[in-house]
Amino acid sequence: MRADTKMRLQLAVMVFMMTNAVLFGLGIVAVLSIPESNGDAGPWIATVVIASVAVAAPFSWLIAPRLRLRYWKNKEAEHQHAAGQQHG
Image (cartoon, rainbow, N blue to C red):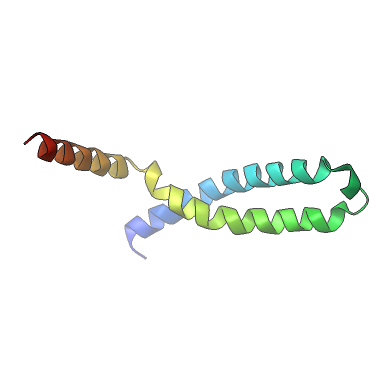
């Protein structure tokens, strides 16, 4: 495994835990705020757990590179290059 990929994976795991918690919280509040589902909340809670994991995994993989300084330096260089071409 390349060093960049290893770092991205480590960052993605950390972001995954936070993203999963937020998505689960939003989902569980939505399920429990519906009075009609209080009797049948079990299957809906299981759905929220599975959905939050399924959505958080790819989302965290996309966010991970943005947590590195290298990403923002490259973006700044691209912006300056584009701005130089517009004025020139």
